[in-house]
Length: 468
Image (cartoon, rainbow, N blue to C red; front, side):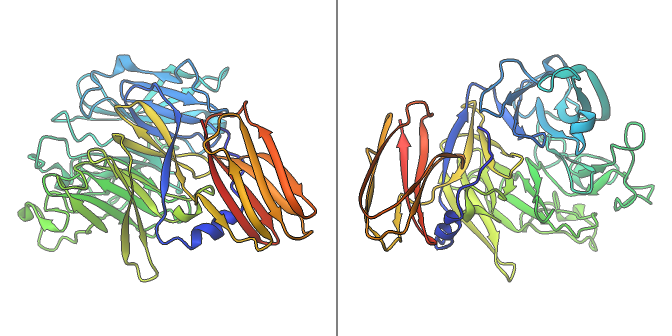
């Protein structure tokens, strides 16, 4: 699964004429136990976080390694419900220092933010005894632990904390300035012992508000992410009884936002007396009804910035654990938001993940599977005037694939075959005119989706085929 070469520029042209992107899920690995996070270490590997307390690796060749990267099951009291090993991120200078950070619940239920170090002798194995604890935050109840942990482009570590659980935030932690629950935290892990407060944190000069706080008013931010191009922050907040929310923080923010819980749920009042009358609440950019046809537990995703699915570029891709639906959220030039349903996935969507090149992945929690999200370009397109016909057969195929076309002029045509990951597996030039027949033996290639593409003087033709 080495993600090296993108699909040809023809996909940009093909997709640009489609109003709504279509996607498919391509399974890349299975047999995981409750996967809840997907991360990369700025290389071609994918790291899969299992809720039970293990981190597994899918290597550059798409193979799942037999030995876990990290096993801290002994530190986790339970992986049931919303507890367990919940989040993973790698230090921006990981290649030099080997540091990575995890978010997990301890045997007593408290949230722990900790740093571990990769073995000096084996990049695929971490040292379980290298733990350095940054933060321990007591949890009054077993749910709403948050779990997200990521570095921003500023080099600081962001941590998404839930409100402490139960229902309705009975302790009003989200609006309590002395509690780290129900907040987005921001830490400088390169200074201080075990961390320092960034000098530009919004409450750094106050004694009545915890200085680690970057934003308040969150219920259970089950997955947040940064747009790798714009650095905007996207937060998906799981609702109480009425509304699932997507909140947006522009990269120009100086922090200090209050996202409303428990004063509000979505756009509606929930417990308005919990907020000061002069408090400026930041409303979500999108909501959907909890318990309705769209689902009941939002799972935040990423803004797509990859190259193999051009129609998705700039779209925020997210889903719902209960309804199993996946949507895209995008804005136009006037900042009007459009939400589009892309797929009913058929999996319990526990997390999305991004690889080093910006391609997106999604995990099926109960299925124990990891899928890549792929734009489904078109089953067949032909806009090369010099072609009378272009067929690929059989489709689906097992081993042998036959390409037939009738070429009307002498201008060469470039024939390329791509796998689902955008890699060229075959390439040749077709010269002359008249009938062209070519049969290939693809026995050694994996089952899945492939694209047969023709290119001639800027004109393109594409056929999608499936190898069984």
